[in-house]
Amino acid sequence: MSLSLIRTEIKTILSGVTGVGTKVHDYQRWAKTWEDYLSFFKSNGLIKGWEITRRSTPETQFTLNSNLRTHTMVVRGYYSVDDSAATEKVFQDIIEAIAAAFKANPTLNGQAFSSDPLQVDSVGLAMFGSVLCHICELRLLVQEEVQR
Image (cartoon, rainbow, N blue to C red; front, side, top):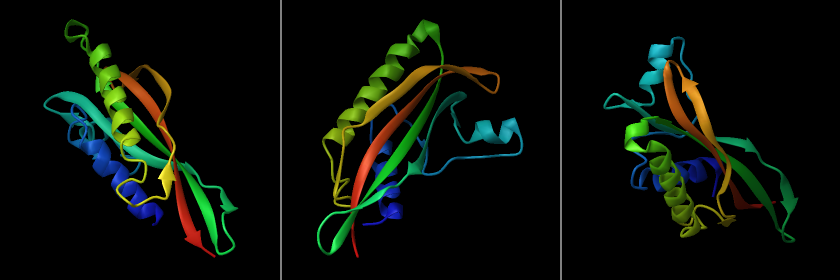
């Protein structure tokens, strides 16, 4: 178990959810221009992307010989708004499917000791460059047992 393996497995699980698309990044993306930044999340002319990062990792004693590290992993999603296609409902359904995928796999395919249920911290709208997008921030607490 390691942060690297946990992060990779989160990306794998997220990428397997129907509707997520192909623009899933296992780190926060940055670019010098908006055009370059948008290209990280654009697919078939639409913004439909995700990025994964770690917010914090406290560590506590778990057993006599091991500690438990609890990684706060954050997943941010961006999805182009199209009112005529009811994308708000589509985006909300994708979030629910993501939560279900992680609930069904609490050890992240054996790469984690365990994980808590996915938390939906925020869902809203924001301008992504010049594109109005649905956005969300999801939080997953992932426990990793490490030897002392």
